[in-house]
Image (cartoon, rainbow, N blue to C red):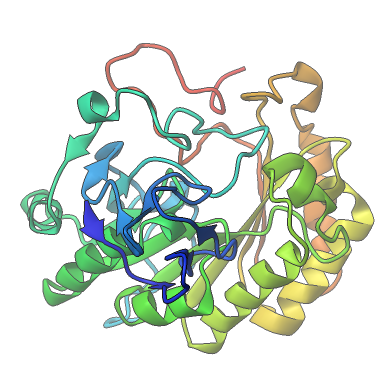
Length: 328
């Protein structure tokens, strides 16, 4: 447990407001916010699972996906096979019906038994030992764990190790101001763009608040305005709003106008998982190709149709079975 960053107190009843993500939870004494990892103890907010990891292992940069990330010193684009030390914690600020990492996007009852406990120094030392030049914050949502992300990223930069942030687009501007000096690249989700409004996030992600899409898009634009490398991912689920042609076109135009025509946009196939574990929801390859070609009509230069079974999900290394989003 560690005292949290990004919150304000001062109310007479000692309720605090968390500013880690766009939910900006109002948290009464002895309660946690939506993610259940940040608790009000006596009018102060604490991160309950600082240094608790669901996984720490090497993986390819292209699986995040990053395909246009340049080394800030040399200007060379990293290969998609570039090894990263991928790390993730537990819980999320969304509850997506098709979550590919549901085992770590919620808090396990036996977290003390299953969590890997490491300090920032140990994380960076492991990257150096394996001669890995990039650390990736991934798998669960890093926006809910700014304390450990910041400490690792600072130490990584001191050791000439790059950092990348794989995120659903929910960090607040205060959060971004905190981490951007130590973060080299961001891969953001736009789960549903401006055409859909908040309906998709409410139905699919359990984000029951107004203005969700606008807040996410503004966080992404804020990151770009501060000169950071950004790549975008949208998973196309058949019959759901992100896959309709009007939504794809509106999102493509927003990306071009706000992030630039060179911004990579990865349009990805949905593999049935979790509550949406229904074969009919597996995206046809033809739909991915069609939407990618549609996005290119607005002159986005780097649109990718992601149809293979590669993914950035956290597999069980001790199991012979593949994860839900990689298998049929």
